[in-house]
Image (cartoon, rainbow, N blue to C red; front, side, top):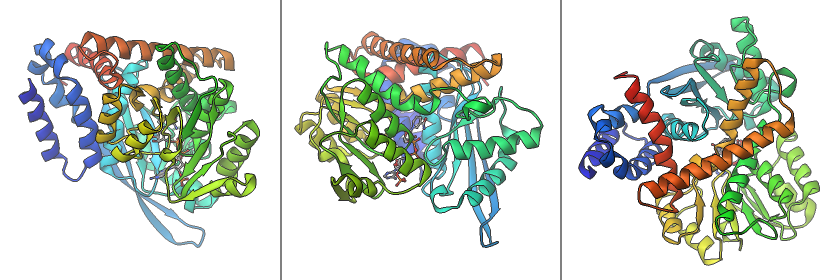
Length: 446
Ligand code: NDP
């Protein structure tokens, strides 16, 4: 069986050259699946793995737009429709200058398993562009989004593919994208999630990924009869996921002491309380400033060009980007006593870092499980759009909490069933895979 899995991975490397992040994501999943494939020879016979590593469809397109000086600018747009085995494609759009095909394929691939774990009927997809919204005025961002949707609209729809936000795509961008979609198809439908609450959005959706990552960590702590009370937490990033991670940590009596952006991080030993957090939200979501301004305002230390993993903590919440914790960072965290890691970001830990966490037997929740609260609540937004109702905050939060609890349970159960108890990485990959594989088997070779 090992040989067969190696063969599939070699094929992935050969067919997708120059896409290291995609190789990394595929390898992690395939490595977990050996005991499953041994127990289910029918999956090999039906070519489940060979089909699962090949996206159903990849769309690449030109996005021309006009900047404030009247000049023509051109970016590249993408949508990866990876798997529709268990529902319409679902996954965010990322606008960042480093976006390329390989990064979006890794994200779309991960999304397939994550969405399966949520218990909701959603396939996996991801998309975006190498456009950097931070460098543009509101008008430029709007014109870019309109041009992006002028092509994307023909490939998406409420029963086909439902994009959402990700890095660089927040409420503002979703608004512009939705406005253009509606104008082109002349229909008010739930084609995007993360919408404003007055036009079809769900309460709690903006908070869901961060809240969910903390709920997941809380479940992990419960397995050791522990809680967040009095715990010191290190958080990276300062965008959507990071902000609501800090908010929920505060609700649960923990102390978040760091935030970062691509320029550096701040360390506030007193904790980022609710007032300071609203300063961050205004700074990042409205003024679109840099995290250094927090250090200036509250007279705390700012570390230019560094990541926060050297700060002593009980729990770490990597919530910025892929591969932000390497082997050395993982060692430093462990040495300083960190025993909980809950990944708000997608694949924020390198394979060598993951190995360190697993070996140390800490409570390590991989992104696929820990950050699934965002897409789960997007699923709840789709449900509310379909029945033309909106649930109140308490109802959505209750459902989110319950979904995170059940993801945690399914992950632990799968890990135990397949011989690696306590290993959340293997558990998440196996539990996510089993549902998708069974659906693929039922639907024939398509
Ligand atoms: P935002 O754009 O709101 O925030 C991203 C944050 O990460 C910013 O502080 C940004 O800093 C920082 N960052 C981005 N790229 C880099 C980089 N290359 N190096 C250092 N810092 C970086 O994005 P989100 O909060 O939505 O997403 C954060 C992570 O969470 C991503 O990995 C995303 O895939 C994942 N995620 C998000 C979900 C969601 O619902 N939004 C759902 C599930 C996962 P700067 O401003 O300087 O660029």
